[in-house]
Image 1 (cartoon, protein in one colour):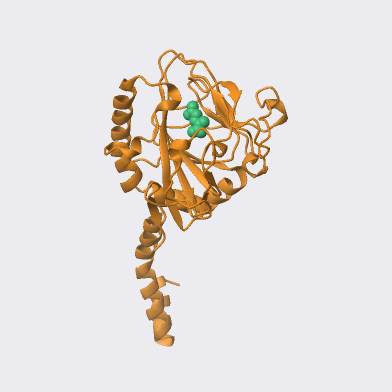
Image 2 (image 1 turned 120 degrees about the vertical axis):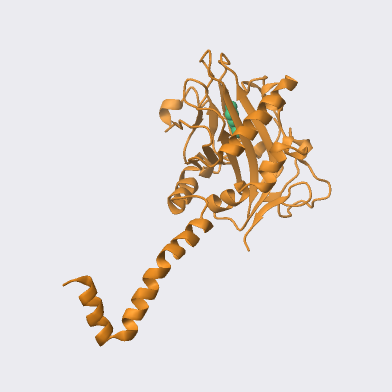
Length: 298
Ligand SMILES: O=C(O)CCC(=O)C(=O)O
């Protein structure tokens, strides 16, 4: 039957029902637009599940062209200081592109979405630039033992160049964030290779196994990335980064560390005293003047 004849017949027999159908159909594009507006991250459910299960998930294309260009320019300006690999951190404390990106872009909301958290606060940001020929692998480690915080922490590691195993892809042991292991922090050389342990007497920690030597006993994954892609990963996941063995391809990574709902302040005598805030009570929610809220659900 022709659709118009069918509708006329329906309208004749059930006038209220056809009115409802036509009303609903006319609203569908609007409803879809609204849903897309609310979700900055497509496939959100799948992404949340992967993040919860593996402790790491790839988010495609989270930067606008404008942010990509601005962040690249800011990185290039920053590295003119000639600091060592790990030393480019907390740029977000100074007015400028890094601060603007952390505080005014949609990044906080994305973090909250992926973590399923009602709020997100900014802990600090850090640059990891591996120039061509930087062959040193960044040793296997977990991040959170270095920081005065317990509970859910997420890093967003944003690629500003194409990244693959040739120029320094990050590697992860999926699921290791949920092992319950607390690995002792350690001092590294300029490029992140192991030198010696810190907090040797702290019984809370166990020594880091030699994951490189035993890598065939684990599932090790890496991600090829395009500029503007980000890896969201848990503060407790075991990870490392390959060296850059290319002669021409830079690898600029911009990492931002966020606290999520449930994260609390726990000052410890660790390598990151600069993250201590004497104004914050031990055990309080990890948010405040030093760690500003960048997203809170309405
Ligand atoms: O990008 C790198 O080389 C290392 C990144 C890393 O280990 C981290 O962000 O925790």
